[in-house]
Length: 514
Image (cartoon, helix red, strand yellow):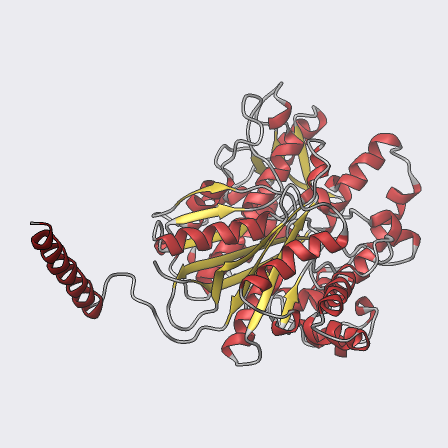
């Protein structure tokens, strides 16, 4: 067996303000109840420009241009203190504008469900041709586009959902079946956008220099479900994304567990690599359209920009030990079991202290904890408070109870072992995994030694159980020693010596019996 390591990580955001307005769940439900609602009328004045989105400090953290702790040095509210000279391209990913993304949705449509106007197709093709990734890709899948009248007819007949830029209709996504609700136009829009954003994350791994053809298995861990009436949620996003990204030697499957799915998927990936089933596994996820503007009513009521205007995505590469990349400690995995209970103390004990006890570690031995990394500027106005900070205080309180630190040290613990929340509220996206990439960077720079990635999920949302969910694991700096995956010459000699000694002992015992 070989130790699994995190070899690479990419993070992407797609700025989709118009998609927020038309298809975010809060807006959709509001429109169904009251099409003339004041909230809907106010939305356009609270939407951010692409430049504002790019300059937003948490977004710059997400794509790897600045480290999470640097947010402590930027005055809040962050939306009033933009990052100067901010770039849409980051060390670990990128922020893509809505029009280019519509082009990707069309490019990766396998069943001709996406229609774009001729005018818009020409515009977006020109933009993608100058993109550092897509300038090298085959863009024939965009086609030449269709007449606007054809798109208008499909939308007016309610057999397609429109794709808008502001008030301008530039395309649509058709239903894939005339009676199956799992293949209606709205679901197809959500699923195709999940697919396209996941592919974008994978391609950003390739941009970092990784050969996607070396990936042998893909695990997709978003919150959407693709399937038809006979197998609702049957999948397979993983293989669909792998196909379009050029992972020609990969197979794959989907893992679902609400917000905790990415952490589950990374543990699964590490286990597959350690067992030698696959040498290279990619864990990926696309964005969730439904979560766009999820807390929008609270933001508008408090005169705050609609900050939930981005789809999120990530791709993390897990491989056999290379002697350099951070190791995933499969022996230090925490899990929220059926019998754990739902109290905060019980959850933190299961996910944090239980795995630490296995390794003889104190709470303070972990340099950084990555919990539910939601951006507090999104959650606090909605009444959910500062979620990461609350988690860090619970971990610290348990540390006090265990004797790992003094009560007076709690504020310093939160500052030193935690970090500000910076991830979009895309459900599965914030839960632990946003820090995997920065942790890699910091470990290689010698800034930290150990981190714990914690994913938590709300299983009760599916109305199947009242249980919570959660899983955690420890990443640590590589020692530089690459263990052998096959028996070394010394191992062979030792085994031979033991076998010879056993044979001699057996012969002696046999003579004594005679």
